[in-house]
Length: 304
Image (cartoon, rainbow, N blue to C red):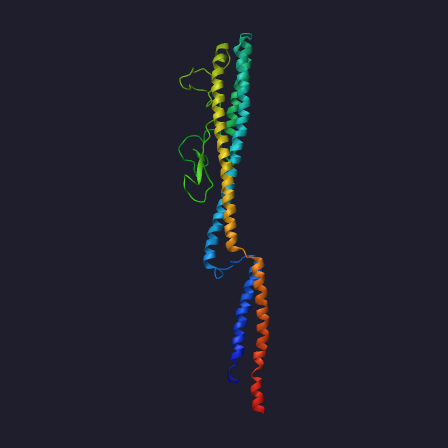
């Protein structure tokens, strides 16, 4: 190479190498300080696209777990209220048994019936008052088979959709929670009870006479069975939701692991690169100083 003074080509080459090494050192510094291998699209364009899809999937899965847990809390609220109703039904059967025997007078049966009616009224009150986040659970608003409950109105009716999946497939991402009416009249008890399946119109309405008390026993048994079916259905739904939560948690965990392999920096490997780049920068700085002094040799020739 010729000895020239207009262009210091050696210094230009060293400066280019210095810029490259300094850029690589800056990248290593950014990765080590953030803990991420992919900070910008320039780091790994394909990896960034895959990571963002996985991150959205993880966020959706975690929200699905929260949705399922909320549904479990709702079911537990309904089941707790039904447990209280169960106590009232047991007391009503006890009162009917008491009134069905002949050792009580008519006036005494009227007194017994007054408590019986109070228990029926309390069952209806509990059914109408039990709500979760403003959604009534036992008054019939969640009953039926048609999928109409979409939360669009203050008193939406129909089975409630519990959405936990990341898509909108009815076979994979959601299912419906249906809870039958649990008021006293719906169970066939109390003064508001109607005819059920051709049964005696007076069955379960009152225990003010010995005869009414005797036929009320069968109506109360039917009411207990109806209530137990509701609770059994709720229990099955709760177990199903628990299994759903377990599955979603596993999915989220494994997706998080895959996202980590794409996104997170390997500190040991990157620290090795950082040290290498740091040495390259220091070496380039030293060589640039040497290259900048080379044109002085031409001055020696001129001066000689």
